[in-house]
Length: 216
Figure: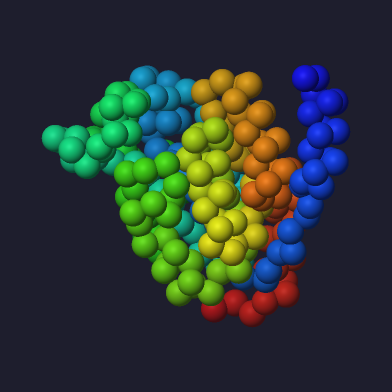
C-alpha cells in the first residue's frame, strides 16, 4: 500500500481529528536520559536536535509556571524488576539505578522544582503515580516530548488519551533510533491518540495559555 493509499484509508475512517485543548498544560518529557540520547550507550542514538527542541518547550513551560515532569527508566542491579521486558530487550539491562545512563540529559535544564518519575515499563503511567501527579496539578492538557517515538512515546500517548488528557506531540521533540518506525508511529499517533504538531505550534499554545491564565 502506498503512502497516498494509507492516507486515504485513514481519512475514510475519519481518523486524525483535532482535539480540544485545555488551559492548564503540563509538559511531560519521557526518557530523555543519557541512555537514549548518548550514542555511546547501546540503547542510545544522537538526539541532539530533539533534546534542544525539547529544551525550548521546557523553557517556555517554565516561563508560564506550567508543571514539568521528566521520566527515566531504571532497574535494580539484579534486574528482577525488569521482568519480561529485559528478556525481550536485553540492552535495557544497561539502565541500572545509580548508573550514568539513567541520568537525565543535562541539556534539558531540569531544576529542583520539576518532577522526576522512575519507571520500569514503556508507558509513563505503568506502575507510577503519574496519574495522581497530573490530577493534583489540575492538568487538562499535556505536551509530550521524548523517546522513543515507537516505544515509550507511543505507549504514553495511548495512556494519556485513555486517562482523558488531550495531548500535543511536537514532532521535533520526539526521536527514535530509525526513521521508518519514527515516521510510521508519528502518523498513527496523530491519527488515533494525540495531535502531532510543529514545535512552533506547541510553543504558541504554551504562550497563549500563559497569557490567558493567572500565574501561581
